[in-house]
Image: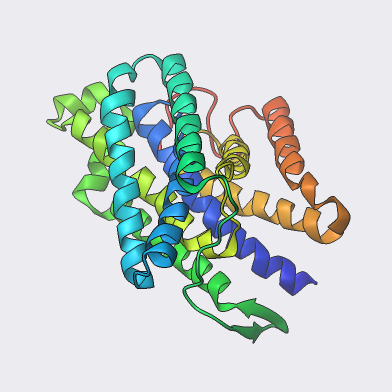
Length: 290
């Protein structure tokens, strides 16, 4: 039982970490809450179904095209919608929530609202610590781990990463240093959307695809960033695995009450907001970014 909990926590935590990291990057750099973030997760998941199942494309090509197309849609959304009102935070929240609902309805129209399933990339399973692990689940965790490592290297070891962190600290100072803030914001939006797309394509073969699938991870991401600290990259990753553990424990300990896993995440969020509003790794004021 313990081994099963560990394996499932790692798999779910990897997906949640990708989503939460993208959300935190957008907030940490652009100072906006992009509430359409998990809509791109949904679009990428449907993309895998469309390219791999309906068109019969090879898995690798389907994955690449889904990520590229989804990232392109995210960048277009940022340029046409978010960038125009970026300074008005409440407006951004309302518009991005509306965008998420629009994407949901478009998926409903395009795929008639029927339950769909994407083909698995790999078949079979193996045993580790006495627990059977499906190859697809192992692929999800390894893929998430690799992408998280790439993002860490990008942020800490490259000139682009330095520019992103400088912009997150202070946009005015970044401008004075010669950093093109608009380009950095556009780049961060692309990275964040790509992270959501990677999460979507990795997990798509394990899910039933339907137009409302963006909302459960949306709730989880809100709880994760509240727990970890809004805008904190480290907090987002650690919070993702903590809440994944909470979710798995609810499913294992209350098999008939598995539907409560979302409520458990919200309960954690409420408790954190009451006793530590800044989260585990956030700060009360705005000095800390990324």
